[in-house]
Amino acid sequence: MGTIGERAIRVEAGRAAEFSTMIPHAIKAHGGPTEILVILDHDGQRIHLHPPA
Image (cartoon, rainbow, N blue to C red; front, top):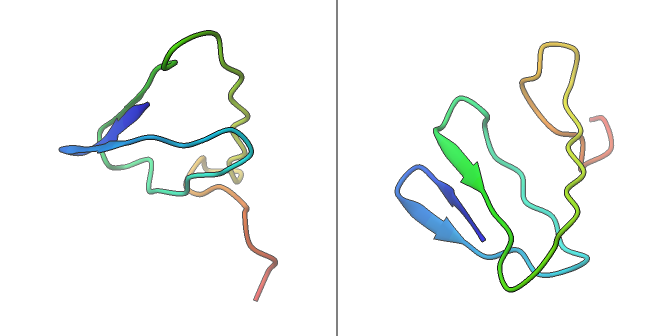
C-alpha cells in the first residue's frame, strides 16, 4: 500500500508502479512483509519500466 500525492495505491505482488519522485509519496507493507525494488536513472528522476524510445 502506498500514497502518491493524495491518492492511495495498492500494488499487488508481481505488479509495478511508475510515478514521478517529485510527487510526495510513501510506501508501506499491507498485511505482512514485502520486498521493494527501486530502479532510478542517474539523477533519480524515473524508473525504467519501458524500453528506450
